[in-house]
Amino acid sequence: EDPARLAEFEARIDRGEKIEPADWMPQLYRKQLIRMIEQHAHSEIIGALPEGTWITRAPGFKRKLALMAKVQDEVGHAQLLYSAAETLGKSREQMIQDLISGKSKYSNIFNYPAFTWADSCFISWLVDAGAIVNQLANAKGSYGPYCRALDRICAEESFHLKFGHHCVIYLATGTEKQRQMFQEAINRWWTPMMHFFGPADKISTHTEVLMKWKVKMSSNDDTRNQFLDMYVPKIWELGFTIPDPKLKKNAETGRWDYTEPDWEEFKRVINGDGPCNKERLEVRRIAEERGRWVREALRSPKAAYVTPLA
Ligand code: BYC
Image (tube, rainbow, N blue to C red; front, side, top):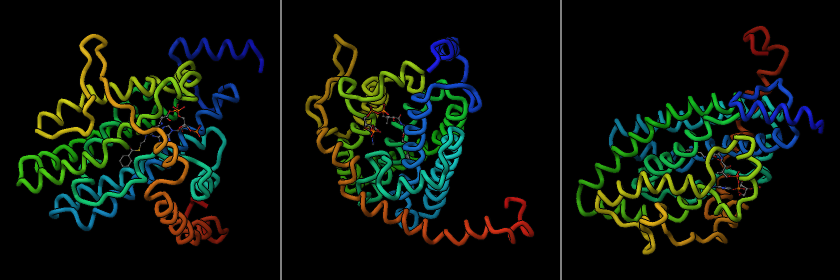
């Protein structure tokens, strides 16, 4: 690659300019962005599934409505992100194929089952909180289309977080059984939640290059630490426990000490062998098949008579 162009590209990034689709960029920047944005889009679309199963079972009409709107938002986020990734040259069809075939990754956390309503509340409050910490940072990054998508996603996610918090407060101030349900949800979801921010910095593959080019604005350990700073006190304040005896803020380092979550489990789950991976991809595969006629109809020359899309 031309060293002069690379230097100018890096100088633009250092000046805080946004890179836009038609601008020159190194192949590796393009490749890394496609990988990361695509994985993010898949995470949104697959992330809709564990909560989606709770729409008909959410307690009360208002919660059903709110959850339905939230799940719809998540699918909308996937649309925004697929569009952002498409600006880099990979087609949406190819991305969906790579999801269904298992070639592309998506967030570890959505491969676990949401057994109870409290699990769904954990996702709405704490998984969304983790996502917001990550996305607020990366919205200040260097690639224009990704940052603009993240700005809009964060605005919507902040409603999800409030909805999730509201549902958790209801359980926390309810009966002993309701409190126990949420405690069990924390026990089930804590390890996947710690995994959610990615492997420890010392074993993370992509952090260095992504941070150099301001795609990633905070390392995995820093984002995890920021999440712990913001949410552990809130969980403790509600009288719940976190299943990690080592978890405490270290007064000397100003950071959280914790037991390293089982990274072997993480690897298994992100490589296709978690409790729900097969089921999640099967749902997407069936949706893809069922929607084929709609896509074909839209592409058909006859569709030009009924819609300007064709
Ligand atoms: N899960 O070098 P590393 C939501 C992979 S959805 C799976 O540290 P990087 C929501 C990583 O891909 C929002 N895989 O990677 C939706 C890499 O594998 P490959 C989800 C993971 O990219 C519905 C390898 O491990 N948020 O909130 O520097 C309902 C080495 O890792 C994970 C995003 O997607 C993981 N957790 O950093 C409710 C954020 N972590 O590709 C809520 C966008 C790592 O070499 N993504 N891997 O085969 C990112 O910010 C970054 O990609 C990560 C990882 C921080 C996740």
